[in-house]
Amino acid sequence: MASEILMPALSPTMTEGNLARWLKQEGDQVSAGDVVCEIETDKATMEVEAVDEGTLAKILVAEGTEGVAVNTPIALLADEGEAIEEVAKGVAAAPAASPAPEPTPAPAQEEPTMQTSTPSPAPAPASGERLFISPLARRMATQAGLDLAALTGSGPHGRIIKVDVEAALKGGVAQAAPAAAAPAPAAAPAAAPVPTGPGGIAFAQAQDIPHRVEKLSAMRKVIAQRLTESKQQVPHFYLTVDCEIDALLKARKELNEKLAASKREVKISVNDFVVRALALALLEVPAANAAYDPGGLVFFERVDVSVAVATPAGLITPIVKGADGKGLAAIAAETKDLATRAREGKLAPEEYQGGTISVSNLGMFGVKQFEAVINPPQGCILAVGAGEARAVVKSGALAMATIMSCTLSVDHRVVDGAVGAELLAAFKRLIEDPMSMLL
Image: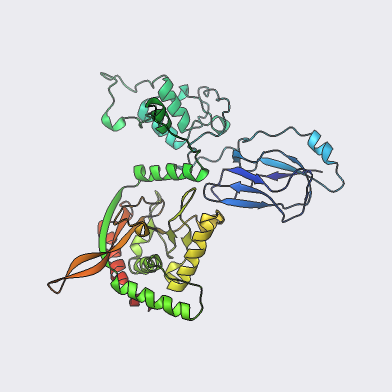
């Protein structure tokens, strides 16, 4: 009997993915462990291996299809001796993105940012019937004063999502009845709706500006969604220190010479020192190695440093796990491997999901100083600028030194100003005395 190949869940939070490419074609023999297709998630392109053997009788979802829900049948595999023509004949092609079972609602979780298909809107629920609506869509509708019962949902199982609220705001729907008699429907400034002005495409067309449109990748959609949520929901504050790194540069040169002499294919960068110093600083100030949760503050007992890596598809943060227990050479080798595979889209989900703190380094681009956006649920991210020669005062006399500005973005819900200052002070001391990192 024919068996189904299902859209796999490649991470605990994955609900859908894009079918990037088929590596097997209809009629091909498939053995257990063979790679049959490639799936694009929001962070990487992953290979899918067959768990059964047989003949690929029918491809149900064509390559290039976006928004394929987890556990959707994507192909049929005929058993040995089974006629593939009969299997293919008895099956109609499945829709490109059949909806997954309705997930249990969770507070402030992932919100689709773009529809990849145009399913028929579900009718508004009858009185007393459960209303399926995402937390973000509910908040937007409430702020705009829209009647939830008048909205129609285009998400899975008729769920009302962000784009449905935006469409209602543009088209006009019934306003919610006021709870009590009010003088006038003038909204308070705090209850103003989320701005839904024209996007870049409409602006360019209206102004007759020559332009091109590049389709959003799954990664870019998630980056836009999560960073917007971070700036809206996480109360950021920023702390900056200037670190003198002449001793660090000297130590780096000497260590790399020793590594080269020993024929080890490892080269330590300034960023490796930063990762090591930040991990050790968190051991000294464990109160900063934390995350906010409505159920309580979470204090991590291991330092996992997420390192921001730019890829053609967008930013990804592979993780140096247990960085507090690794030396500079180990951090350098691991970071290089993670960055290489990140740019190739070959990271496993567990290699970029998680982390207790992040580092973003734009110093190699000549950026002097910047403030990075926190990557929830982490409590902090360190932004590292370029090392540059500056005039400093030493022992009452003017001198030159190589200075690197570092800015810590902090979630004030979990880390107070004094704790953030303690962390930066410990980091600065370690950076300026690199030999202490080797102890």
